[in-house]
Each structure stands twice: as C-alpha cells, then as structure tokens.
Length: 255
Image 1: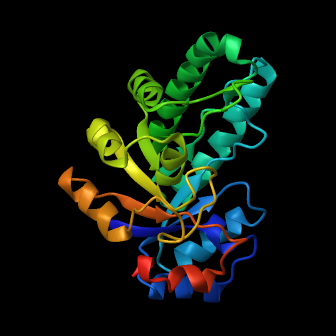
Image 2: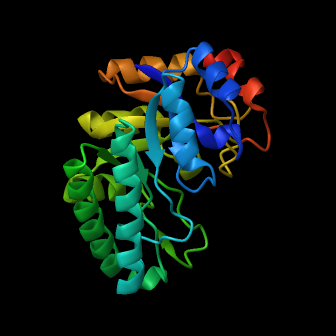
C-alpha cells in the first residue's frame, strides 16, 4: 500500500521545495489536478522529485452526462490530451467524474450515455497504458439533478458496465451515509485507489483525518483495506483552504 497526496491539497502554486518536502515526508506519489493552472509544470516537478504521478481529469466544465455532442467531442479531445501527457510522464492512473443529468426525470437515459462514454474513455486510457478510475459521488439531496453515481449500487453497476476501475472517496461515502467496510468489501478487486479525508457527514469538507466525525483513522482504513488484499494508493485529499501543505504532510495521520 502506498501513501499519496492530491496536489489540490498544495494549492495552485507548487515549488521544487514543496515536492521535495512531500517526498521527504514519505509520500510515494502525487495526484495532479488537470484543472490547476500549473498542472503540466506540476508533472515536471513531481517527476524531478522522484514521485509517482497520477491525474485527476478536469470535470467542472466537462459534464460527462451532457446531451450535447459538441461538448462530448470537447470532453474526449481534452481528456485525450491529458492522458497522453500522463503517459509521457510515466503516470499510471487517471480519475474521472460521471457528471450529472440535467434533470432527475431523465437520469436513466442519461446514465446509459455516461456508461457509453466511460467505456470509450476507458479504452482510450488503456491504449495509452493508463488506468481510468471512476469515482463515487454525493447525490443531489434536492433531486433537481442526478449525479453519477448517486448510490453504491449505481456505482457498482456503472463500474461493471463500463469496465472502469474504482476510486473510492471516503469523504463522499461518509456524506452519502454508506458503510465504508461494506463498500470496500463489495468493491472487491474493482478498487484501484482511495481518496482519504474527513468531514462532518453533511458536507465534503476534506478535513484531515480526526478533525471530522467519521471516526476513520489512517490505521483503521489501512486495516480495512488489508483485510481485502488492497495494495494500491491511499491519496490524502485535504482542503488547502483549511490547512497548509506543512500542516498536511506533518499531521500524525500522514505518518
């Protein structure tokens, strides 16, 4: 099992010294956010520091459930560019969000569209020697829209139908109210990465482990994962607007 850091946690501006500090704190790799203005330079810094590289594909303006073919073409064009860049830097995985249906009434039809696009994106990633990871999300409690996936059952269905691997976000799962232990067990060998943070079980606060109410310590998470023979990365995805990089990498939970 490896300890990684999401570079979202380091803020928009990263330095050589930051990458060195991350490596010296015992982190094996970093997950770079494609939406950061410095993302490509971050890949260069991470490679120079001897850190393994993963990628979080852009999602804020790229809704995988969009009804527009023009937006679909843009999504594939941009994600292909990033997957090629990831391959160039020797990266191994890329995380993707499923987007949201415009209205909850059309969520079943839109789900089939998302599964089709995930399947095609997965094949693209595979051809570029990358693993595409589909991440669990938090449902729209007002039910105005439908976010993919909005339940563990829906997530498992979409993982299997699209052929993607799973990125389990523990914070999203806590807000959903689903059992971490049961979810890890149900995922089985689909699980390829874990995003780790704490929260108040109401919102996705990305707190350091122990600062929220979930009760999931690093040791507890590691034990649960080991029980199911997981040996992939645990990616600390911590809020840079609440904590400094030094706060994060020196916190007892990251030791």
